[in-house]
Length: 344
Image (cartoon, rainbow, N blue to C red; front, side, top):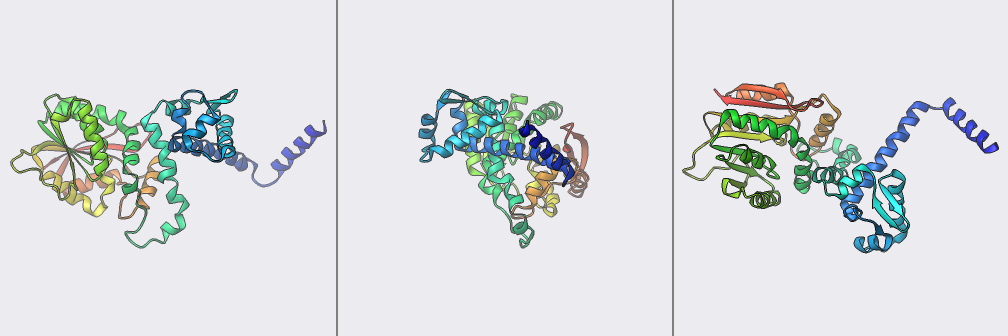
């Protein structure tokens, strides 16, 4: 009984001091943080894939080349207490919904959790240093983690792909160009939207382009696709090739400095046929936690990356000689916009 009374006194003392509601919320935040970093470390280490099946401590230690069994065991206990792992005798197994999806190899989830440790936390950890950076200075995540960033952006694909299907059905292009083609997912979507369409892609990340080429070849689509490692601002299509009826700029415009965007649109316009269309899809600035977080991370990168405001996109396209054909929000809960524009 004394134990119960002591606990009750502790609860009362907590309620009477400080900010009890805020403290309770902080505890909830801490638990969410622990879950996120546990899963992120499980993905990065490769241990979660192994935990798709029951594994002993010795088996996991061998995979991780572990010299400190007590640390591995302590880490596994975190997963058990979170409900992400289950211990069965001397074996461990992925149990939670997130852990099971990650153990099964969900690529978007894997990239999301890997990005938490790779770069999402960095700008917050380094806030004081980033606030004191000279103009143009900052982090190099866009270069160092290009593959992970490209894969995280795949979360938008279920909303973007149906939109592209509708655009292709209406525009009926013979040739299309995807700027910032990344993993090639939207090159593939364009190809699958029309079996007669030829698609080219341009991206700066050579490793990402190489993987995209391999994926397109495995899907039997390489004969209608051509991916280039280049900066679209200086890239010139091979001589003699016709211009494009459709150019897509998907989840990429925010990598270009604001003052360079009208010139970028003008450059892309020079690659379009008369009556051809440019499609810009992007998260826009303000309106959700996700957009504010992404804008902050971009602003901490070296250079001048930033999310555009939707009105800014329309204004810049107008300055580059385009008329907006259509503007819509693709994700109901986010300021994620698509704009179709045609050169005047």
